[in-house]
Image 1 (cartoon, rainbow over the protein chains, first blue to last red):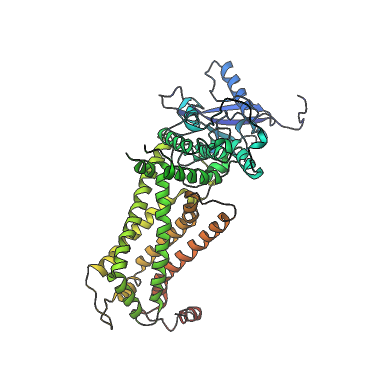
Image 2 (cartoon, chains in turn orange, brown):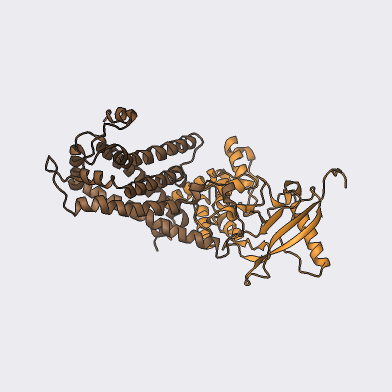
Amino acid sequence: MAGSNPNAKPMNLTLNVWRQPNRHTQGKIVEYKVKDISPEMSFLEMLDVLNEDLLRAGQDPVAFDHDCREGICGSCDLFINGRSHGPEKGTTTCQLHMRKFSDGDTITIEPWRATAFPVNKDLSVDRSAFDRIIQAGGYISVNTGGVPDGNEIPVPKDLADRAFEAATCIACGACVAACKNASAMLFVSAKVSQLSLLPQGQPERKTRVENMVAQMDKEGFGACSNIGSCAAECPVGISLENIAILNREFLTAKATSNNLA
Amino acid sequence: MSWITKTLTSTIGRKIIMSVTGLFLCTFLVVHLVGNLQLFKHDHGAAFNIYSHFMGTNPIIRTIEWGLVLGFGFHIYEAFALTSRNKSARGAQGYVSNHAEQNSEWTSRNMGILGTIILIFLLIHLYNFFWRARFGSLDPDINNNDDLYSLVVSSFKQWWYVVLYVAAQISLGYHLWHGFRSGFQTLGLNHRKYTPIIKYAGYVFAVVVSAAFASMPLYFFLFTNEKGELAANAPTLIHAVASAF
């Protein structure tokens, strides 16, 4: 392997993996042993090794969500040793490497736990609740017509930076998974503050926050207790300040919008 | 449902009620604490009894008292409503392994337990002092006011009562440690200029208020006689501090 470290010693690990056949059947933790895991593997590659072993033994492989494996898409939703995306700060599961573990370790792997995120199978959860929240208001209207001159819309640099920081949310759901209340407010607040900070987000500013919060509540997510575990576990570092912005936007919208419903 | 009830029963709306009532109750703590400092006066409770008579009879205070009842009522009700919602949001199947201590503070995750301890304390506290002062019959003091002071002193001479009070004040301290700044965050009052100040002001508020309340039962239990007079053999430091009152 190019660039591999010849001193990296392979590891043997014990995995406690949540196995659940489908949404309607109760699951349980099943213990597996994996051997000769290179410290240079990503966590997902280690699970690939486990699945190859299971397939060779004629067993059902462990279902888990993954896509880009580059830390961008936010698919790899694993709760590892009691932490969203495992022990390393600011990382997704695919960017977590086995060198963070030691030979002989026991690793517990569970799916995100939230009523709004039902388990599809094993470690794979249905996060379409997030899609429905975005559909409820996480967009801007783009009008037809000539292209406006970009410089005609003044955006202060600090606001552009803050909006961009909020926009880095990859909707992975680590915030919901880590939150004691399974609250989705860090996710919702990232989108609300991103769009409310920019001029392009102004036309739907009030209806957006009203509709997104209503959908968030309808999906069954909890309320925010300002614990901060969401921001601590967020792979892209979305800050709690966004939740304050969400609260402010919600209160202002409810107090001043023309919506009586 | 109207837009008002919809707003106030949403997750954010309920949190806003928690925050407004919580910060209001913080102002109550200040008033209650400052008034009670009169317990430390060396006048056999004369000033404290005048104060408690005023608080129990003044029509403005009696009116605001209903605001306090509502403040506590909503704070407690919303705590139960939110806890119930939050528990069902996690679902029946919790984590087998969860290391929340690695990503958050203990106090912030245990506001409900801390609040429940404070609620139990509050009921006992109200029964022992408020109920007996308002609806019971207390002996008159030298100014012919109800002698609530003597009841306070005799209560704080019982060790289990002192333990209850100190435990409740430790809970209150932890509750405020998270609750004070959390209240501002919920109202959307987060700004890089003020949030660090609010955070440390909250820590100071939590420690000062709970320590000052806890000092009252400890003072009477450890350093005074049955009449509330400072014992001659109390430490010099206590004598020095007490002389300030």
